Image 1 (cartoon, helix red, strand yellow):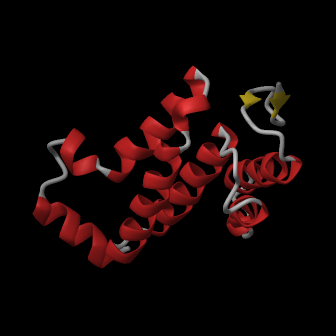
Image 2 (cartoon, one colour; image 1 turned 135 degrees about the horizontal axis):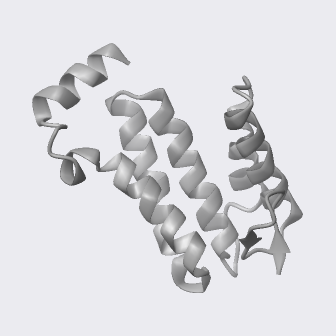
Length: 128
């Protein structure tokens, strides 16, 4: 089993996917300016014949990238990547499934957190 830099198992055989996932986490934790490095994971294997859960994590991280940006356009893009991520979960381990679920909960925050009413979401979209 392949592991990322944090020693967490990633269900993939693609070193490009693992490298991009590691780079994305480094950029987020280091408040870097190259978080779009995660897009390289998707570019590395966009039409994988045997989709892996590692691709699910990468798609979820691309969704997170767009969620950080905020706004309705970013949310729409994030949800499309989340749908891709969910389509790859069949071979995922439990942590990978929970990771995707957490990003999905973030994207659907108004559904899970009553404080985010439609009016608050509109206000947040205008601010960000």
